[in-house]
Length: 326
Image (cartoon, rainbow, N blue to C red; front, side, top):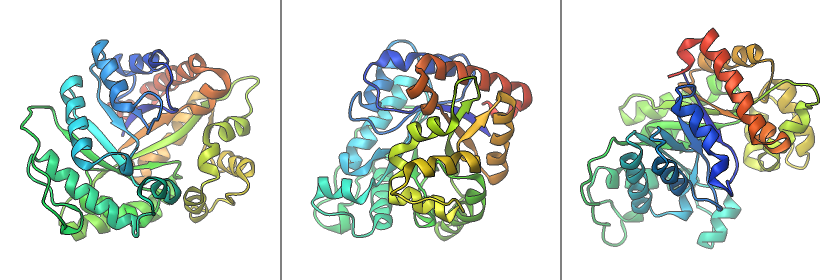
């Protein structure tokens, strides 16, 4: 299992991300991830870092489908692969129904069907062949010009079995966020395998973003968890997933939900050795790449403190579990 890192908020200054890139460049962590951002756009951020000399493996976890046509998404991703000199992971996801409706006028009739259509069209553009228009209506969009690059891995953000089955059939990677290891092993990994079997292909690799924090004097893990995950803890699709995983949560109670994250170990908090031990559970659940998310520490105590946590954690992981670093 690889261990990577995400810059976990929408950046306003690219300089904040540079220390995270330095950890990856130094071989401490395998890949640098960034989620959807409406401030500094993720593809431009990664290109900025490449221009500074950080030619790193990068990934998006995740960019939202309604914001970008599949042809544009493919063009951006393969540009990054060329600029970084590394295979890029393009993670996409549908977004919340309200967000989709605000852009399209209505939510997707079926998020699973919308994701499947988007992935097929994305694959067509990355294979440099014409991709069919949605629902077979209208002319297909033309192929992108040929471009030699290290490659693009297509990822789909999944929380529940329906999208896991789509990822199993059509994606190269399934990307999960805040998903407990027991839930992964019981619900999502079997769904990935069912989708892969239906598609007659191997199951995609599994990438999981995990909230982590090193225990230090003056830190309250419940405050860190609430600050890090407040938006997700009030979202029905996240609380539904956590409820399926056995946590007592409700979208109207985000602070109590944060406490449930800490008490269940879904928010991983402790000494570096304790955090490294908890991450082994993700490897046992079938995770191929775990992505460390230090949003709580960064937002409450500053990004230098988050980088300090990451440096200690990566050192402990390399010492105790050399196979957890690429």
